[in-house]
Image (cartoon, rainbow, N blue to C red; front, side, top):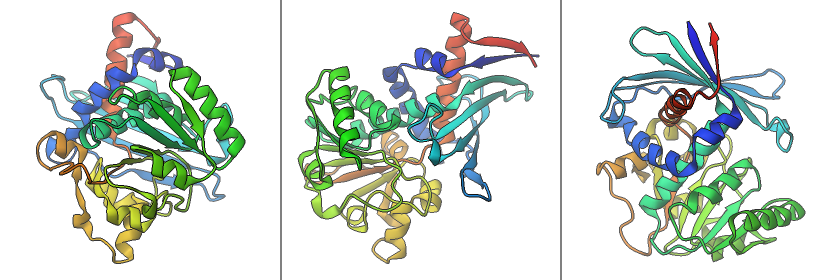
Length: 332
């Protein structure tokens, strides 16, 4: 039984950001009314608290751009102590199966798939919700997601200035210089969160912060936020006021109600109800929900990630790998 293995470098080669943004426009409406079967992510936590094993199974029905249904699971480990090392905090694989007979088809490196599709999903949300003229981008954090978010956002908006903030000023300054040079745009690091927040048209939070550092009091009308870094109920990057002030959108409502720390904290404080979630980005794309209403709205996309995104991206990688004979085929 042949199975194809595709490593991280090959994923990066086979999944260009612009192509992944197109794929996420296809994947995001599949949640909810789109027919995807995707249980809420589960996690096995190590007794010593060092890390966890996360599991995201899913099934996608046949659709116009994919004749056959898709079946698979993403399995990842999250070890925060690895941040800044060659290993990275997230490691794992996407396993693809034939939905007709259950045969395993591929093992695809998941860290690169996750990084690219997460930023691509933020780009789709930005394109749907942000104002057309939004030239100043602020990124909070200087890890892998910070870099790919700059790449992705430039695909959907004419970004002419980049502002970086991070807890370590020296690292933030170095990251700003490196990122500005890489993408050919003016970039600067700022020492205060509020300076980045006030100056930006689009804000992307990509940190591993446990407690909020971005305050709603610093926001101004017309901005758009992609809140990406926190992914469990006990952590949050933005405060209650931010949640309350923003038109609030998610990738998958069920996951947001269970896992989105920022939203759950505001709800538990009695400041919002479940109805504060106006819909998913997929709902907006499919016409099931309304996005920005006027130029003064502040919009927010809370990203937790969906296995439908992983499966669509991984299937594309597999098809490209087969077409170009990339990866390694082994007998399983």
